[in-house]
Picture (cartoon, rainbow, N blue to C red):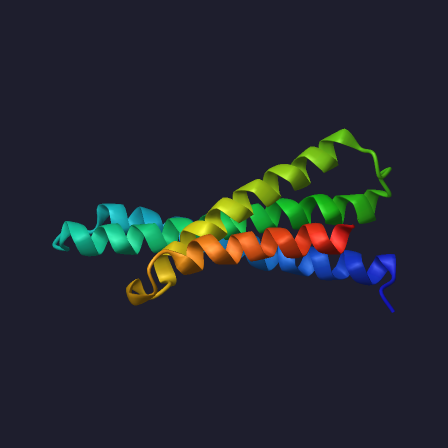
Length: 130
């Protein structure tokens, strides 16, 4: 059963793990910018991958932090700060996810994955919300 305590535990655990990953992806991106002796094309691909994943994890960390705070501090559902934090986290996560799809999808598939998957996700989200 999904009790409030269980949801708080899940979001708190994932928040700490994702913040750890944000630290390591930030470190990776920084080291990629400082790494000598690598072609600019390979460095660009490495940085793009790191930045895309960093955005996904940062956005998801914001979402989880605000959901955890709602549960832990028993905030009202109409709390503007928490709602805004979730909205910002979702926006960052979506942009990072689209960037990651564009980066990691095979070149032979063209633009289809990073255009179609977000559109399907949007249709799914709206459809389930109705």
